Figure (tube, rainbow, N blue to C red):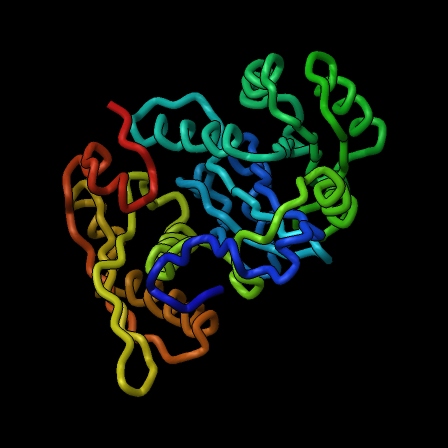
Amino acid sequence: MTSSDDEIEPNETSNPTEAGFHTKCGFVALIGAPNAGKSTLTNRLVGTKVSIVTRKVQTTRARIRGIAIFDETQIVFVDTPGIFAPKRRLDRAMVDAAWGGAADADLVVLLVDAQKGLNEEVANILKKLKDSKYKIALAINKMDLVRREDLLKLTKDLTADVTFDEVLYISAEKGHGTDELVEYLKANLPLSPWLYPEDQLTDAPMRHTAAEITREKLFLRLHDELPYATTVETIDWKVKKDKSVRVEQVIFVERESQKKIVLGKNGDAVKSISMSSRKELSEILGVPVHLFLFVKVRERWGDDPARFREMGLDYIK
């Protein structure tokens, strides 16, 4: 992962074999219902954390791109928000981002949780995919946690009305079947020069990644106490003379009662969150990180276009 605070643009001249097009490159959108395993799969295939992972549904809010190289093929994995029935403006923006990621991709992989099976959320996704022009592979995740006969029945149900280019069985967490998935992607991506330098693992600015890491720690520390109406924004990033990094972030909540939850008794909760986030950021950057967290109440931040831009989402009226 790049430690730069600036977003790096695709590099169209980074590949020495560009002229002969001996390489392949393309975008692969991972779509599915919330908690299907998209972020876990993205992180495994990229080889490092580029998307946050928690047990809380709808953790991923915007499209996150993770970049990986397999032999002569550079694959840009687009981890999209979970697709569900939206109720709020933020929900609608997240679902729109997910379908937008699919529309812009060379290949689409639909992830389905084998344990949850063909539930209402998956059924609604299949309805939209039925008449789509996407080239879609079906990846049934957590295949190791269900019986073989149940897996075969689920496969039959999922493929009844939608024609998939390939059906794969994987475990994103354990890595089972991911080699087969990569081989399928390599075979079906177009000849192209690589779009990014080979040492770049994500196209997200580091300040965005840092905010996401702190948001992950919020979810992990507070679990069900934490409302969805919470976001994190990096407001300052400075590299000091000793190469350490000073980071200031704001945790936005909508009500004073939510602020008290995030702070915790005597500030214990926010201190724990800061410590965990600082530790992971230091490991990623390879330098000491000085992290300062502030908790602020901003009523109805979910209706503020500026917050949507910060999260990389389109503001939908």
